[in-house]
Amino acid sequence: MVREICRDEAFLAQKAKPATKDDLGTAQDLLDTLLAHKDGCVGMAANMIGVNKRIIAFDNDGAYLVMLNPVIVRQSELYEAEEGCLSLNGTRKTKRFRSIKVQWQNEMLQTRLKTFTGWTAEIIQHEIDHCEGILI
Image (cartoon, rainbow, N blue to C red):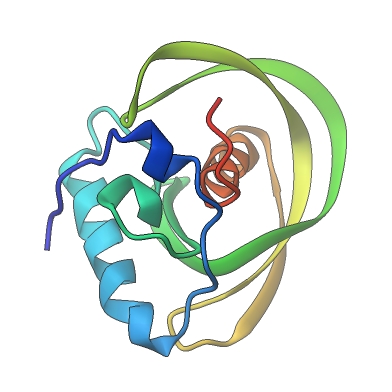
């Protein structure tokens, strides 16, 4: 189900709670909402649809991926970026890493570990910031 985009900065600034199997419906809603906004959005976190859970969805080079409880376990090559967000007005400067290794659970709650680079890594870092309550 496509949900409305949350713009409440007080809500968005909260640290997300861990996702469980009971949150798989939210994960699907997040993906549905991202797909509905794919012309102007490449990634979303659950708090952007009003759910305070550690779930992200993003465009992974044309194939959409959902991560439950993502954590960056390694990062390298810091650079400066400028990003926008559906939940916030305008763009903001931030620092990102060109390469990140992420651990997460898939929709079957299986633990996965993968290295992402470039644009995809930047998207994931932005969405994990949402999970941490960080507004760039």
